[in-house]
Image 1 (cartoon, rainbow, N blue to C red):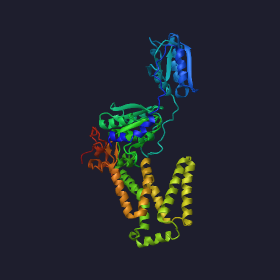
Image 2: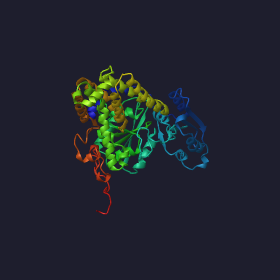
Image 3: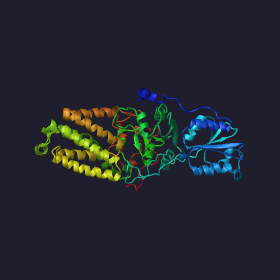
Image 4: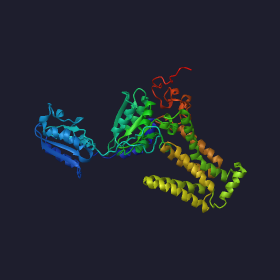
Length: 513
């Protein structure tokens, strides 16, 4: 979808940002008391605002240091700001910039900028008689340590996951790609809560048209605030009505680095522990970082297993309903007798039987996720066993239906991407409805509609069905099978990378035999 078409559906969202800006462009006054009064008017009912005034022998007149106590590193303020200002004789320099020993110091000239810097965790320094304000980066908000990813577990990969601080997330990616071609463009969006968006890419690989498309989409957003990565994904995706994710959301730095080297873009949202990757294709959601840490025959087998799981998780309950309700003549006679014996006490039609079990499974899944981990595992296991046995003994559902639902659940757990697995959960119910109305014909109609929808989708203007539609045989080396790494000498054509050839000689070194 072009930017023009994408903007057509954004007109309604644009009204979210049509609110008055609370910031002020009032210039800084020379009188310190006047500046403090204006600050107190801006930050009313803000008990964590600290305004400390004192006499500094280095500056002519009084000095006021202002910050929000919960967003700063107090040890940095004491050592790098207060100590030099109160004891300037220990330091050398010709200006107050030379006096401050904090890492980064800048200057602003209006209260709108002062307000924004204070809310971002910086400390500002007002000096009597000056119409500019010194801003020192003393960020020290609460943050957690780097931990093992929760949704993307890896057996042989790294055990580091992204956190809620964009600076740390950028550093984690730089550890994998220590190259000067790794560039970062930063944007700030949000009328009330300005959030920092970092766009990372390899400058010599990325397609500039795709990069500009993404920048335009993010830059034109008019909204109060972007709280997490999922909100940004929904705001900039090509087709908001599709159940399929159009960006890969990852919490692994090694996965993000791999996508960057393929010619894709990583979008880091400050305050969110996930990173968006785009453009992406349907096949990207069936690839895992362990695929490239395992021997290629084993990785190929596991990947084929995932595609089989996709079909099972989407169509198995629908096939059961179609065969039992309409097309029972295709079932072998011995099996149909077993199915009939299992269903002789069941009072419900196959659709209601399947719906009851699938909805029960979904409730158990959500209960296991929302509860604490030890309790969640117990609820999932005990609930599944007790409910499954009870409903069969009561004659509410058949034994065959319990087996079908169990296979479907296991298949959905194999899908490595949570967003794709969630989409399949919705499609399963649609296929069950089509099977109940039209039998096998309904399933075929649903399959053809699904294929047509996948072919029509785009991600940042790149075909979602690539490399199958359009067909790019060179990318099939990493599609259903995973050929040896030394055989994959080119970057995926679906990423539209400007530099398609991977650098270096990837051929294995041997004796030539």
